[in-house]
Length: 206
Image (cartoon, rainbow, N blue to C red; front, side):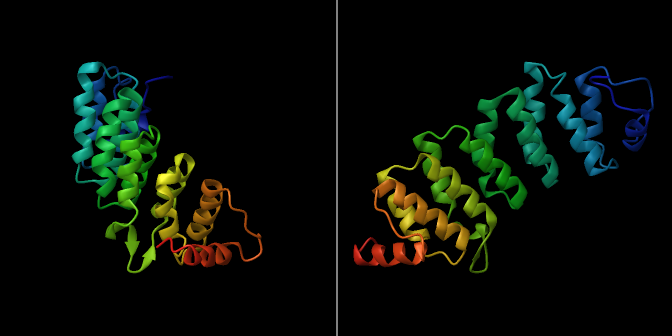
């Protein structure tokens, strides 16, 4: 039944296996129970949104500061359901989170409202050191560039020119395709990226 947690889940969470959870605070007890498994705590935070009132949003938000990466992640997803505007605010902060999964979730939320400010914020994240593994791009860089590419205008051209030379083939191909759209310049599909790199050098774009 909706808003019910089974006997097994309650038992795993270390709670008394009474009938069912009836209020928001019962879910919070599970989320805060450090003896419960990651999956149980995650599920409880997600399900708490079904019973959350406006006055409960701050408590959900508090988990974006949890020491556990999965609760920070869950808090973002939960906030998106109960207070999208607040979720966006917190997501911007978590773009620099130490956990890649949390950063990725933050990108998804920020990108849902791709106004000029959020686009600028995401562009700034592309070159941050924590989005590289030594000299190699982490997949979140492509994720960010994909979001930006969808709304990119002429003034964003430099972002894609710069990353056209990224050794990650998926990133360089994305940038070449975006430059083609922005400029209207058509290149042969054979050696497509290489052709764009040569053209960028020819035009002194960098």
